[in-house]
Amino acid sequence: MSDVKTALVTGASRGIGFVVASKLAEAGYHLAICGTTQTTIDKAAGKIRDANGVEVIAQAVDVSDRDQIQGFVKNTAKHFGRLDVLVNNAGITRDNISMRMKAEEWDAVIDTNLSSVFNAMQAALRPMMKARNGRIINISSVVAGMGNPGQLNYCASKGGVEAMTRSLAREIGSRGITVNAVAPGFIATDMTADLGEDAHAQLTSQIPLGRLGQPEDIASAVCFLASDAAGYITGQVLHVNGGMYM
Ligand code: NAP
Image 1 (cartoon, protein in one colour):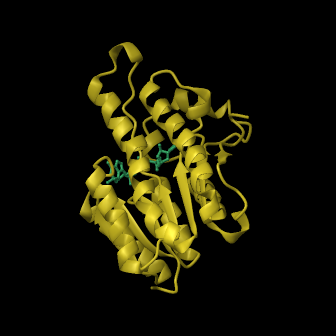
Image 2 (image 1 turned 135 degrees about the vertical axis):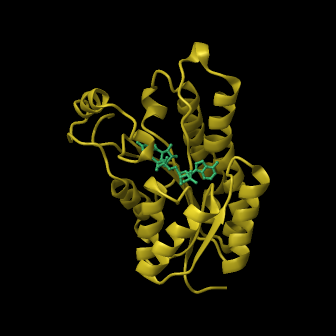
């Protein structure tokens, strides 16, 4: 078993996941990261390795496929002999008003954002329970609490993630494993890049801190929840949204 703590981050090729993985590497963790394509996840892994000198396993994994995500989690624990932190970050949007929402739009978002989180957590439980130690951190969204027109599927997936977070926290607290969520507000990544100037200005006007968040703002919260300092926190949703929802 490696002496070095190990973290697995899904959806780490870019955006929030890449910065979360980078910050965990800075903190000294060995990493396993995934995205949808091997070339982009390899590139991300190369950058993290070069900057921090930690070991990084990078693999193309479709998190919406139960066997793929569970296999990735199990192989990571086997390779390093331990799995200390699981960050379920991969997520997509397929926006549409409810009357027009297609079955594929509903299914894709629920499979990628919700079912994947259950499947990854389930696979992580065996190594974490054996070690009587573990941190699970799920990335939710401010809209789980607020609701958002045109995002019924996305809001349902993130609301489900928060409910699962609380349920699993109750189930496995006695085994030394904490389960928490981080709910970002609007963060400057590819996911929000298509907002027009008007929508951007309108959104910013609703944020007391007067700006969109950066991936670093979310990564700091994740690293805190992964750290020893957060050892007595479980079943919580940590909101990081510049005050847009309180
Ligand atoms: P992003 O820039 O669009 O990046 C999404 C990441 O997820 C990419 O690494 C992508 O991989 C990966 N991914 C997507 N589908 C996947 C699949 N089926 N299997 C494996 N990996 C997959 O998104 P982001 O803004 O960083 O968002 C990260 C998380 O934060 C998501 O859960 C999102 O819902 C949540 N969030 C974001 C915001 C925001 O304002 N940005 C707000 C609230 C919550 P590829 O590069 O291979 O596509």
